[in-house]
Image 1 (cartoon, helix red, strand yellow):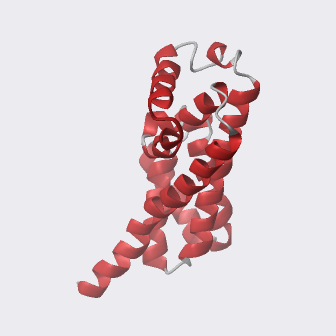
Image 2 (cartoon, rainbow, N blue to C red):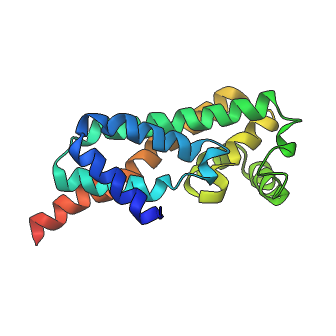
Length: 175
């Protein structure tokens, strides 16, 4: 099954079963933000498609946005927790055993940027999966991490859904 087919299937499922939109978006955002799962789940493309579906089908935006932000928050929180509690074991887990440079890049990024890096990391695909984990490994104080986590989750959730949700409405109004 290709990414395009997965996106079409998911958006069509959400169109037909709108009550499932919030849990599906929560799971996709959670998976996109969780350290190991994010490398396997093509959630960004699917979430952009769901955003477009919101605008086209008139599905309420705010509950789905809340699901996306909550999923992103909890995915990063769990990644931070794993890094904090299993810091010595993480480099021996997949995918870091095969790609140790991912962890090294995330560590260098986090060391350079600190708390702002925890915020910024969410917006860059390869870093999104690693920065919260590295923040935990480095022992970043949880309150600073969670502040960066919640604010970036809110901005990311809006940014991933709003262009489709509001852009289609705007375009249909003008054209």
